[in-house]
Length: 110
Length: 114
Image (cartoon, rainbow over all chains, first blue to last red; front, top):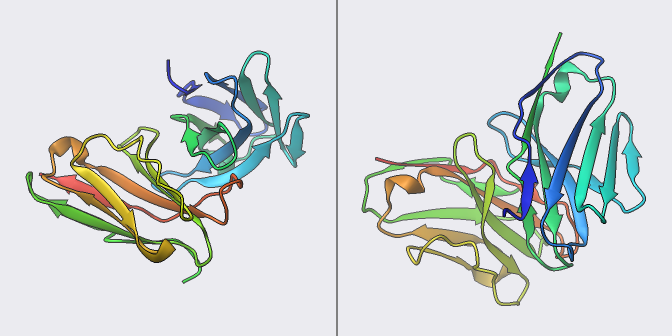
């Protein structure tokens, strides 16, 4: 089983839609979780960290479910500029490497 | 420069040749990572340097791959006797310290092995 698993998509949604991605991780001892965004042929960039209590940044909401070992990303009111690949990232402990999922591709259409 | 710098940006080589890829991290960043990404695929972890600690080499796919980080700054990834399956974009990233989740990536070195 992969350490971090994501549905590759693509998710095709109209502008204004709400879309959610899930990501599962295999190591129950994992401590830190993040979502990165990667535009086509560009390098990944941090979108947001995921906190145990859940956190929101504008139209983006991230949640963690430790019992089921998954994290989620919710995007409200999708914009064309949200089209990208969203990478789930997990770290086992502080000082350990970051493990990336294969990403979920989102395409927002007019 | 302000960001992570990688060179060369593109490298085409013949099967069997050795290649060296260079990464210049953001000044002051103690952690440095190498990942590779094949077309349409996710990021595959290769190696991780953190300060003076022994590097985590657990992701290196074979003994043809090696990396070093001199003086806690510049890093070189070396691939010996390249194979066609080594073709990928090699991404370097640095972070201020080990505990942060924010990696700053370079634009990558695209390697094509003919």
